[in-house]
Image 1: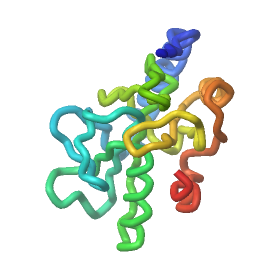
Image 2: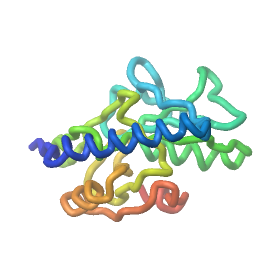
Image 3: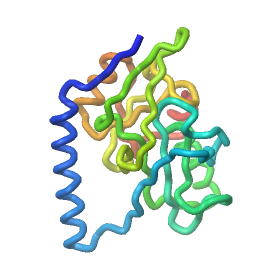
Image 4: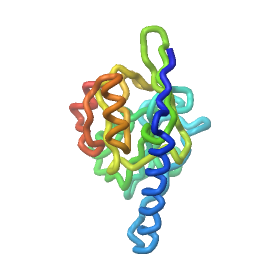
Length: 189
């Protein structure tokens, strides 16, 4: 069974696009942005946490730029096959003094996602293009839903509260600010 969620997305995309353009324009005028941009996670990129090839797996993914550190085998950002791996890596590297500059997660409020049934599991589609990522400081996530991604239960990010509520209403789960995800919540996944 495939469930497509697209109702209201064109309006949502317009509103989010306009808001993003305004924010970028203001940041350019004030010189206040120093965030590197997200990249596409396509090709043979392997997860910096678990080693899986990112574009071979479903669900949300992530990437983190660190202030004074970078991945061992490639230029920044560190990239991840799932939001679970993204958070695990941030927690583990913080124990070594790494400080994130910005973390990006797939934003399911701006993509035309699908939830497909594979056997007895509901699996969320992946969206790996650079424009499908948003910084965690502007996201809420649904945690504890019935939907899975690359590492099992998915932590599903949204930049729009209504979209997060619609997802949680359909698939279960709790809505939490992305910046408030704790080690304990990730360990429950």
